[in-house]
Amino acid sequence: MSNSSSITQFLLLPFTDTQELQLLPFWLFLGIYLAALLGNGLIITTIACDQQLHTPMYFFLLNLALLDLGSISTTLPKSMANSLWDTRAIYYAGCAAQVFFVCFLFGAEYYILTVMAYDRYVAICKPLHYGTLLGSRACVHMAAAAWATGFLSALLHTANTFSLPLCKGNAVDQFFCEIPQILKLSCSNSYLSELGLIMVSACLVFMCFIFILLSYVQILRAVLRIPSEQGRHKAFSTCLPHLAVVSLFVSTLIFAYLKPHSISCPSLDLVVSVLYSVVPPAVNPLIYSMRTQELKDSIRKVISWVSVNTEKLPITLHK
Image (cartoon, rainbow, N blue to C red; front, top):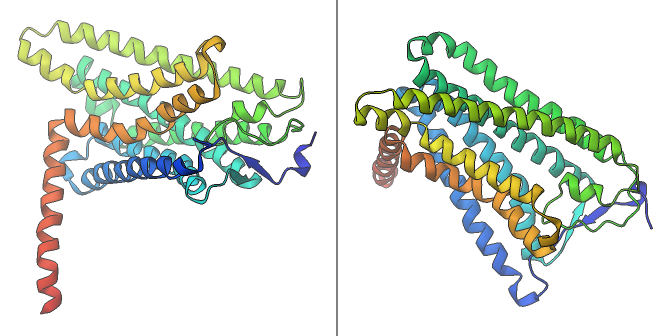
């Protein structure tokens, strides 16, 4: 038995107990991490450099890419380091930081996705009011509200979770620190206040989900009223990337936290946690770049510009 004051580090769940296979998750995660850095970095650079992409939709996509970079950088590097050095340890402060940034970045990402649903609703259902309802100041305010809500929620959850007495050891059944796993280490009946905060957050998340759902019901009704098939396809194609990202994000989280206890086991929980914490940040850039022609063309221009200037660089240095 131990309490939180005596805990200096936590032990994370390894992906394999076989020493010969320790480097396998490292190389796998390294490839995924580099792909996420490249994909999200390209989207951020392209939107920032291309004046034609300075629109509300791409402004929110820029925020989404920043959050994806932050979220995958919170979980993967420590896991890769543990696999590389064959250890499970993470310091108490590092674990608290992981809990904070996971709550902050994933929460803000969900709220940004909600705002992006509103953007698509206004663009298709109220196109004449698009410039008024989604002006530059309104976009900045909505994005700031999403970031601030995620930050405040993460601050409350982290402070409340790590103020609880921990008396059931320091082994976390996850490859990164998250609130449900920390609560399993707390003393009985001492985590009820945190459960109350989780219920409030769950209600807010559910309200956002209903808002997204209703937005797409209205979008679908508006699209079906468009007389030409080409017009319907063009209108709905702008929504498909966002709809795919929302579906991936929500479905993995629902399966992770609402799956039946009868099928729950450490190995399955580990795989599911990778699905909701690692896969979306790596796949989101691919979804948007493949499904959005305007973004795809701009990314090609950026890559061409970089390659041309890279070829000229040795000549310039030689001169």
